[in-house]
Length: 276
Image 1 (cartoon, helix red, strand yellow):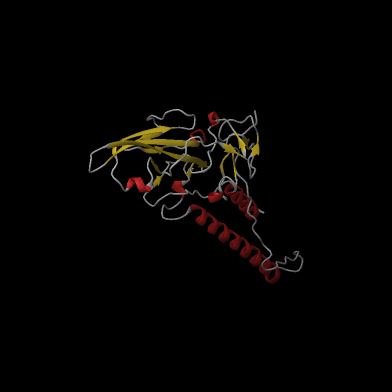
Image 2: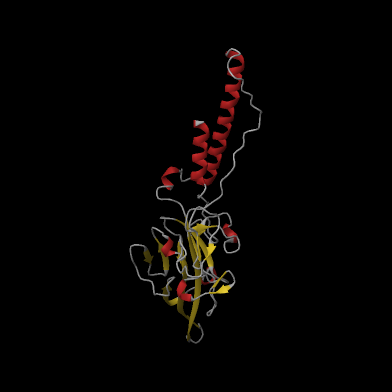
């Protein structure tokens, strides 16, 4: 019974753990933007929602998934094509999920070359981030200057990894893969335990002891698929991270260890655990 209890506890603790992924997360940890289009409608579940909610703006936005309490990749206020060219007199303006101009803080770091890094990432930091790059191009023949602007959109979401998870894994390994491998090892050892107990009872005890019969391959492990409150899976919105438990977007909530976020029009924040 102890072995069964231990296995159940391990499986339950793994239920809310999902792998973290980023749509354009390079090996160097930099994520470049794609050129946005002014006036994009913020959408959720095919319904328009107020921009003040910080709703995910579909279209050309780059989606990034950051582990809870960890540091985001570097968001670059520039596309890869623009980065390969000379940029004259660049000016960068970052706007956060609440439509406010971003400035430096303990959790927000903006460099003088327009790079944004979010630290100790929380549910409240999730949402739509945009950066406008203003710069000039100069014609070599006439030295004539032309002012241009480009807008880049990023959608940043959080994955529910608890504080301290990183210290439990070797940095060169994938935590999810290692955990799944360990679960399968636990299953094999429990199966071997029952097999050996059946053998011992049959060969080393008298007939007064009740017989134990174990059928090979009859022991199975079932994954409990759920997410922690305030998080859920949404294959439509997060197709590039369909198996991830991602923070519930505005307009939805998750009060318990469910798999998906439920609709709630009065939930205006990310990670809502109740429907006001």
